[in-house]
Length: 165
Image (tube, helix red, strand yellow):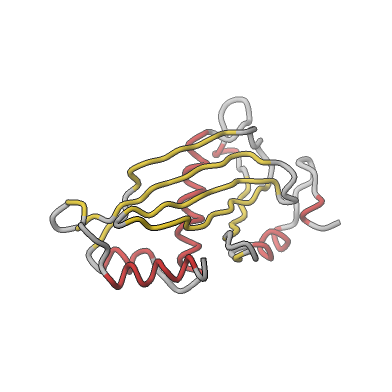
């Protein structure tokens, strides 16, 4: 039985999850598998709402890393990219012991605002757990102020994420 056909009661083997790890799908979604460990959940065994945000950030950083962009290097160029807006829709909970996939893609850049879209789904894509949009803004690290425009090196690097869109 493949990892995509697993039920929540049957945990996929680690190597099956790793095979799905860190890939960009044909529709420009980057896929990042996650697993709901006990420390991710509340007293009822449902993934705590803040865990989803952590998984989304991990997926965004790994998406960049998958094309050779280390987030630390972007920051070293003098810019930070803090979250300034977050919209999350929780469709159904992920429970302890379940595997899922965080899908993310950079939706667009408008000046210094960078929008990322997210979907968290079951491994087989049949269940939708969460949809979200995160807006980052470029900030000058030394001055702590929003930049008027993205530094060209940062903008060029981020355009690589969007590909041909």
